[in-house]
Length: 397
Image: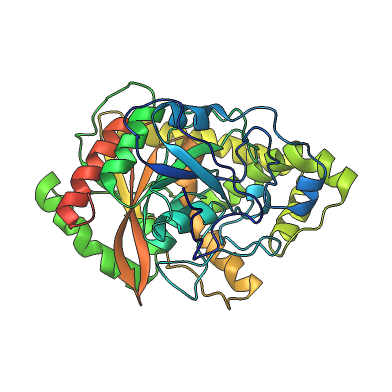
């Protein structure tokens, strides 16, 4: 089979990692790619950074999540670019090249699962694996105009994948239609089929946090869902202010990232790109006394949100408060967008909840996503709901 013509720079440079199916099943005849933090036997997982690649040996085995997809009949056709160390949301990588955003040329593709989102959006593969810690599947899904899911924390094994913040890290995936998003879930997720037949809960702070033009184009989509599902109930989750979600998530993630990467960084003194350099420097000096309130807030937020979702309710809000930033955006502008964005993506991350982003609308020609969040363990029910919602909204099903 001829190699894929990588029209958007989604795949990592060099020889492609290609694995034929190990069986037949729900994914037979489909091709997929994986983010370059999942191991493929015999190849070096570069983690988006040349010094990481230089200081690590080829993988001795293939990540179990990849093997599961191969056993279901899918064919692996390559590894996709990641923002280095998976530590960012723009998708910029100065070493491997930043993938082009097929849904919004001239804008960032979103990260850190940038290559996987771009490969799916460009039609290079049927689906692609990414990882999501603080929004690294959900945000590129929104920016590139594709479907994406962050499953419940712990639902899918991360063995054979590079960690960033282990108490937040999850496997996720992208597709161009809602049915395939659910089909991949049938292969990867546990057998729980709990429904999400409860009410829609409109998270007020997230809608206010969104840029006015984003909220304006997404509200009619919510209204169309209300005609089928019933009127959405307003819910306030952040009496402390949504900025506090970012503040608490940031320090907990930083502490865990330094625990994972600190020894290697101190020993190797790696070259790091813009944005990542600053986040690593901040993680280095993050003190336990600063993190403790973040961990306490996480428990409070979980106790606040989980009862709301126990009966099958679904949170609904803009995936990102804005479309993808322009490639010309300054580091300061990117950081401001990151803070506003993580304030919203932290809801599912802090609580370990499944979240699906649908490519629901466009703003100035750039895609924006609408997110649904359900109780932990209701991933399959959420995917079924997302498929129904896509049909209601006239999106690819």
